[in-house]
Image 1 (cartoon, rainbow, N blue to C red):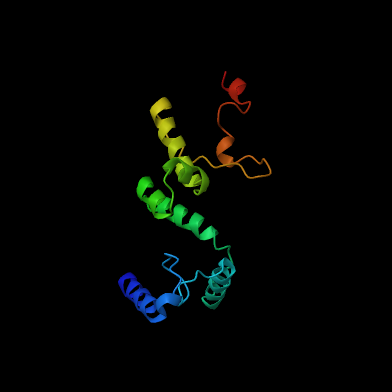
Image 2 (cartoon, helix red, strand yellow; image 1 turned 90 degrees about the vertical axis):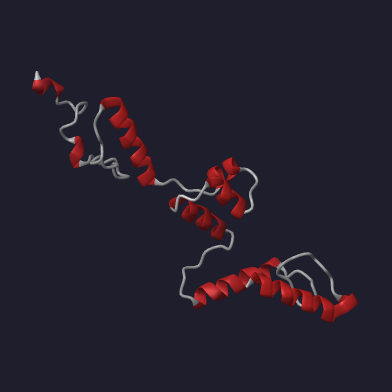
Length: 148
């Protein structure tokens, strides 16, 4: 598809002749001029609405792409390059949201290494500060004296 698109651009360049304004862009008007950014944004929203998708900002597509790439275990350098960054660390800091499941896996792996057990059943307390059932019989909740 890209080759066909580039051929179309070459044809438009020839047809417009000296009036063609070569912006060097892959997506431009028939005369070579770049479209106004709002034009792209409006088209993006219109296509999303037609497809029945929730409305998001166009820039958020980069975040979604980075997060999907992370979830798919894509190489960080390749992902960073794909979304246009030269610094992998920047991509990791700015465009990837926290993955609670990955965080839980890290905690379980470290716990197994340190104490030789698994915390697979540990639940994260809710936002109200409630205590999960798994916390009831754990040391540190006041039950130490009962065992003595």
